Length: 250
Ligand code: ADP
Ligand code: MG
Image 1 (cartoon, protein in one colour):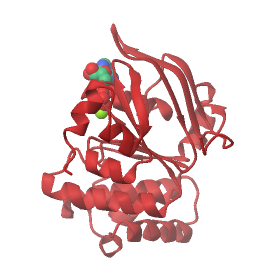
Image 2: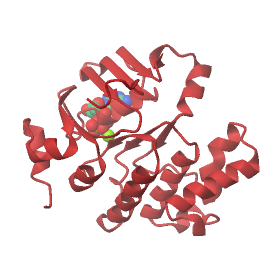
Image 3: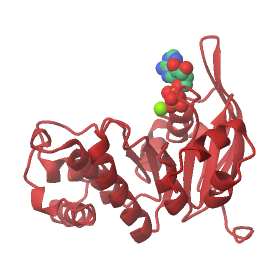
């Protein structure tokens, strides 16, 4: 209700995507407002990555409309798309750091490619590294870091661009269980500090109940249930929601 008079940041209507004969998304509707933290959950293979990747067109949708800041993303030219993508940070499951670049160069690469003066890029990079607790390792190389540290660098890289929207695709799924907690802690800090709008794919239910404003369940190609995080995790209506509820620790 409180969002009624605010323009949505992302608006998705009737999004469809198939791979050969397999329909993955069969009409997804989704509105995300500025400043919201939204978690997307659903069984493996249900299309979560496909949905997130359609928003910045890492994956090309088949049909439907995706608006970002009221612009039809699906109609953008390559040049316009590049500009819009700078406003969308992306955190990958597999970190995707460049092994031959040190931490600060990984974090500032996109800024420098996009023409930021080196001093400014470095300042923004160091600020982002400080937020994820990695400022002391700015000159380390990725292979000197733990998985948790690498993902914290991945988060800093997305933050350094000062995106309006951050897309997180299972950011803790590649980590040893012992390292998951440190990354979730950093994620909560980032969510609490930044005004950036977040769309996070994760199966971490306790984290989601604390950190998300809203949770969406994706199944059979559609958003089958959504609502405030506490409500849908504690009193889910869908089968998939009930399965996630059973994973809550307390
Ligand atoms: P999730 O992220 O929820 O695990 P994905 O969006 O990655 O699911 O994939 C949804 C379905 O689409 C899966 O069955 C997957 O195998 C299939 N799929 C994903 N990407 C491709 C692709 N590039 N080509 C063919 N099939 C794909
Ligand atoms: Mg996925």
